[in-house]
Image 1 (cartoon, helix red, strand yellow):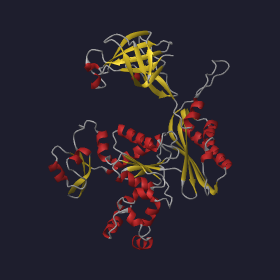
Image 2 (cartoon, one colour; image 1 turned 45 degrees about the vertical axis):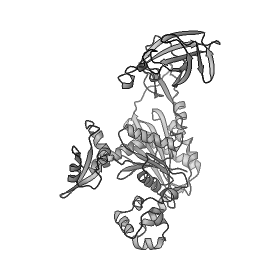
Image 3 (cartoon, one colour; image 1 turned 60 degrees about the vertical axis):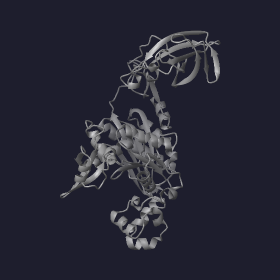
Image 4 (cartoon, helix red, strand yellow; image 1 turned 90 degrees about the vertical axis):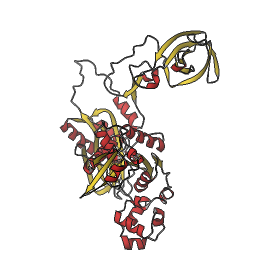
Length: 503
């Protein structure tokens, strides 16, 4: 069953301001000021301002008197909304086919179709939070069975990530304030006047008196939060996206019928892409059902394509995941990520033979949720920084290694601690003990000294490593190093590590 992720941006206005003006010092506090007539008050404050006592709703004059040097910037709701739209469009291209704005300070997405996110929900949420943090955005990310529950938990629980186990919505939200039910402010105020404080108290109250006084809105929000009523997520769209759709007077459900219409939509989409000179990299099939629920399938390609047969095959291989329920009333095909694509002449018998194209195989693996990439060299003496992952299909990397010493076939992601018996500072070990097994060193070569990259990290200003190639009694060859120069403790701990194995 698909789950819902809510991403809350508690500092969206101040984060947007910092992104727009990187010259603002990190230590400088920012407050966003809202105006109404002659009144001015704080509508948002960054962590530095909040730490000093500035809070939302505080009069601007009081905030300025409280914190000298406070940077006060007029609120711009339109700019905040535009920034949220851009964030949502980016998330649509990266995470899921179904992503929408959860105004005014968040986005919501259906996890179905995000096949490339593996490793469990906690890892997925942590990855999302880390990527937004890298972009300078503070987030709280929650996943739950429903939009309402995820929305409430992301805003109420003061943690970066929150996972509400499937089927435990009531326990997760019953003590949360009624303001998180997404009800109009007037209704929330009237409910508080009557003594209601938490969602659990509302849930335990008979529905009829609430409906008589407040109308159906309270009951509808409760039903949506606990999954009794479907709350479909309407995916964000922009004029730049190429989109084709087909509605049905009579709902469809048979696999053959679905495949037939998907094939026709692919033909229409490719024709529109060709007219615009584009090729598609990521395509979403949105399935809208009679009961209002939506289901999505995402197909990606390693390079821009306009091949009708191949795109049709990518979707037909996965349409078996579609659950039509009571019937499908609309199919939509959207080119979420497209790039310029020029027509190229194919090889013929009069020119060079056509090179084998492995991108279809890459596409197959990629659409199964497996990450496909190439490894390319990086100009760095530090071994673990000397390689990088690049796109499986792309331009050739001309940069290469400039090493006088051989490198092992297998390089560990993290050096493995070992014990070594060696004379300092320049002698190779006489023996090493790795993972409980002792190896007597018969031959050795080194040391090769590698210096830290002080321009990247201050801690590497004096750091060095001395690498040795050692061979044991049965011919196994290892790449080991000592942290430090063997004399000065400022250069390293003088501990030994295994870093690679030669073939």
